[in-house]
Image 1 (cartoon, rainbow, N blue to C red):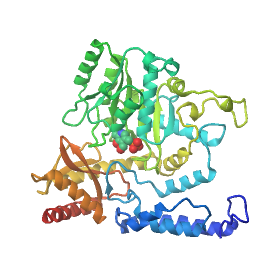
Image 2 (image 1 turned 180 degrees about the horizontal axis):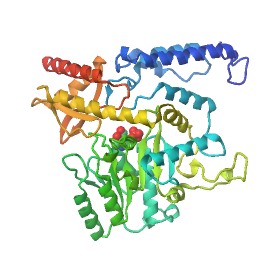
Image 3 (image 1 turned 135 degrees about the vertical axis):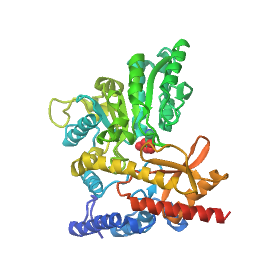
Image 4 (image 1 turned 120 degrees about the horizontal axis):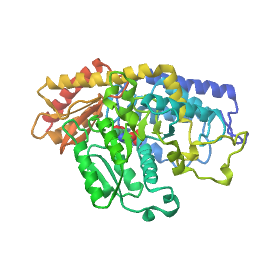
Length: 483
Ligand SMILES: Cc1ncc(COP(=O)(O)O)c(C=O)c1O
């Protein structure tokens, strides 16, 4: 018995040595799990009996830690998302690293609350802010904050840009007193979180112009200029352009320099959703693809995707530190600042967002960047793009599939070369996932359902892509023969 509530009123182990041994085993088991990831299915559906475990009532009395760990081994570990596996190719999922896992455990051990106060975790986060600015070519005095993910960072950027456009009075008087209707612009291929942000920020999604894209999936800047002019002529107030560095569907990149020029000419806030693509800035070879990002007013991106930091580690970087703080600073008696001691410090993270209690996300990012260095991370990003090209070439050589979008970065979209391809594409994706051999996802491009392989995992190799192509052919045979 590691903890005996009858004997002890605190929640620490009764026998620290026994706890140490169980904890070391748990960590060792997780390291083994990651080391042997290729030996298991990419993903498997949890059986009904397993899912029934999660309908047990609220536990009133404690159980032995060993027993709960055994349940974790049986009912949770085998049925996780699967994104540790090199053939998890769905959506845009980072793989994490064993180093990041240990860092996360250390952060949980410290249990730091990173909303503010004068402690070293805040200094670590501030160092990441400076590193993020350096990575993306922002000024040294830029502002930044960890958030859950790019969706949250996009929302925060929209709110800051909105307040910047209409003035700080909006905080007291609300949007209805703010003057002309605000309008925002993004591409038709933008991530859904941009629309959601515009809705949540009270702008209304009918005032988000989804500008058509060119054949490479990039926003048509000529059409953007026309829309802005038409909205101004109608008495509306354009305030924000959200560019995309790496679209979720196909990895397309807007011409960020051209968008920066347009925003400068129109005096608009230039936000970049660089969820994964922003980190191309780490690679001398790929950096030209995101040229112009260094001129953005704000950039949302994730360390948990191509940065390989374990979930979650979203980030928002802002050029105008003052605009950032003016949006959120919320003085209260219980959070007032002291000249020294724990209550010291000028800007706390809680002044830069609506979270007060926050975990120590910076630590796993700090470990990841220090242990691997940006060159190794950039090499993984480059390899993802090379593997996407390799997959593209292999698909061009098979009569079974046709490519459905140009491969700009790390995402390959393709479909069965048959008239009933929508239904077949869906069935192939499900077959691959349910056989546990690979986990691509599907999406809709130009009205057509396509199979989508996004290579984000640092473990994926050419041999994996070969295996994926074999598995694709096999699934295509299986679903067509079972029709
Ligand atoms: C381009 C883009 N923007 C935003 C997001 C949302 O990021 P998150 O899942 O971290 O909220 C994604 C997710 O894949 C994305 O690809």
